[in-house]
Image 1 (tube, rainbow, N blue to C red):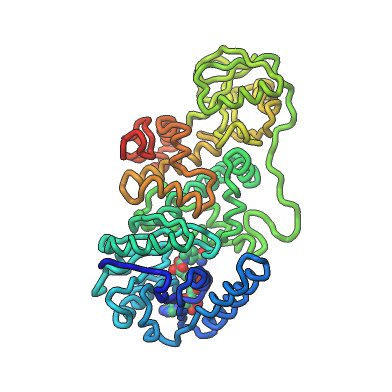
Image 2: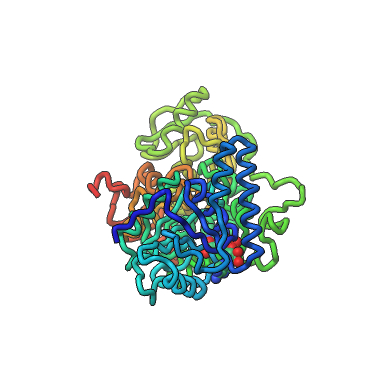
Length: 505
Ligand code: NAI
């Protein structure tokens, strides 16, 4: 098609709700004449007044020049019927998330817009192929998935169906980039990148609560303070809405023909059925009526152990020894590879097995993963039922002396952060391996669409894909429900980088 979309291209935005209004603001600020259309004329008028007010506020706060804000406001017009959208070179629809409604709209648009106009959908879950089916020119239909709030969130997933013209994908990708967005390419598939790869962040947290490993406030704290995530899964879903999060999960589960990796949580469904939707209803996982937020469970202060030695090959745990040394604790060489040795206990990074299953010797305390052991402020640990409290206390005392708050969780395969990250990496490797998206784009998408501190594939690189595979295999062995099975892509990597450096991809 030789598609070119420039700053002067008129843009039509259909659906003047939350997303449509945000997208109109982005396009107008980027210099495009924007025509906004909605079947509900009250919503349309409210959106335009809201946009004017928003642009005015940005100017007042000094985020925009007053002329810039006024010019953007002036570029936003409204259409009373679809026919008025004829001049648009790009139409972005953000109407209700219903396949039939979107199909009808696209088919009506075919009779209105020029043959070379691009038809983009902001759908978060529908198939681009299904939407384009039956159109005269399916090649011009593309997904342009913005994140809420569209003016703030930098990610745009550019979603292509089987029939989408590559020139259309390239033009939309370039246009989004010229708006200051981070655009990633992804093939139409359930959840695209972000809503697919992020599922375990919620799913594992739900399972931990369901199994009584720890309470929500503790899991949130561990994922924030050890995992480096900006928000824990429970505070985040209370913000998004438990109903909205459950709907995304259910839609990916259904679209993947009930893959057990995405089975929705019965516990979360219970919250939704009880009307505990989160901040918007005043109560979700937490209460929002002004009461104090529950504190995470933190182990009481324990004595520094009399003696500590470290085996070779501690891997990701290495910085813990340096932190302890900096705090004046002498760590001698000694003990088994990959383990810290204390008078009455040993400690090692979780392998995905239960701590209580460890063979022979002193009782084993499993240590959870931290994104960066040099800076983490908390760490989760677990011991088997055969581990005496005074043995566990030696490990706790050591970690506390190294400057970490310690959370003791029930003996759980893969503890908290490791199981989450192993599954995120598995999802990401699976998408890359299937060619749904490039590895680099998957990491970018998770950092900018979900605010992850680091992309899951870069994370997998740091920990080692072989270790991730071992953790997943061990967990699958414990649960035997298909949820932790390593993807073929992860198995094929067998220790190599998922980001292609060593495979030359
Ligand atoms: P919304 O309910 O705030 O707005 C939808 C608007 O579309 C309403 O004003 C409605 O009157 C209008 N509308 C419905 N049918 C129409 C039609 N046939 N023609 C013209 N206008 C019509 O919905 P929201 O949240 O803005 O979502 C819109 C789309 O964006 C959906 O596809 C949704 O999945 C997607 N999306 C939503 C995100 C969110 O966080 N809300 C994030 C990313 C994508």
